Image (tube, rainbow, N blue to C red; front, side, top):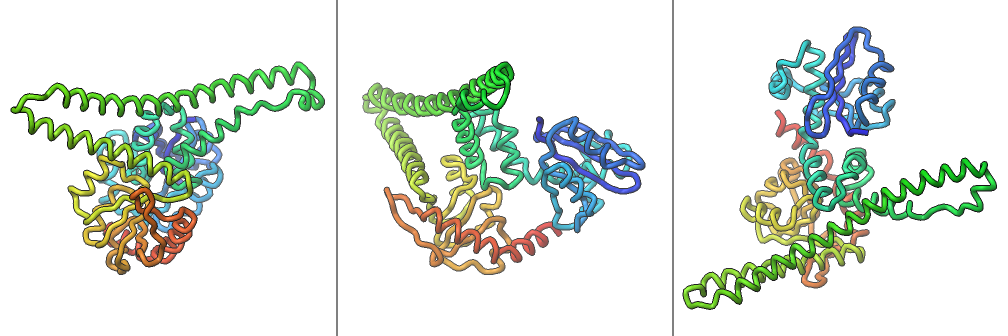
Length: 377
């Protein structure tokens, strides 16, 4: 089913607004005496809800109840949305809004979409590059329900599940429990399902081969250009190509080593000398900072990393309250975790990292909430 976001404004006259993960409006409806059973039927007729949102804080119990009935999460805004904020959120769709109830429901849905839009976009791009677009709905569902920590973990879990499903049950045991014709029909359906899963896995494997071939072709192109440019006037060009070739080879080697370390129970880190716009943008272009762990000496300008949705920042200095209020990610002091150097890459053991991360998230939660409130005033 299509993953959707639902904005819900409860009351004597209730309203719902339904968006897809591209931000397109699928339904706007308000009604006096709108029964919850009617609302549920409407929602399920359109897609699978990822989040039910309201516009007030604390969230009304009726919104929580609807989310519970639909088996999804309720989005709780940090504070009640102001009239001006709602107007700004729904301005693009003003012509489609017939009453205040619809406006409130739509503002709630758009608010959630804005929070998760980068996750939707990154998921789509990643799966498309891997040839796994068929998994989009399942990946988004796992990520937004909080069943996984990041997109990569969701993809890995789904691929593992697909491989497990390749094991066809023994026919002899099943025949004893049900009629032969029913067993044959069920197994035929099972085989069709497995064949579809096998296609997905093959596409994924092929996409990895294509990426490797693509990188090899780029390197070979550099080598050819180097061999062709031999005149004296091209020395600068040759030096530039040599530098680009060396950088590409180093990048590929780093990524291979990082992946091997991850498979062996370590969390690799990206080291930066300082945090500034140019350094972070360049790092993001090379590695994609989503869910990455950054190691830095100083906390100056740490808030720049808010837009990159990193997993954590590890630093030499202990973060103060004023820093924690500015950032949307956990900060771990270097003294609280054991950092090793393997294959010239700074790493921490995954088990230790996850344990420290939980403690940091717990102790820093109050400061992050206060920071969120201040930035939204």
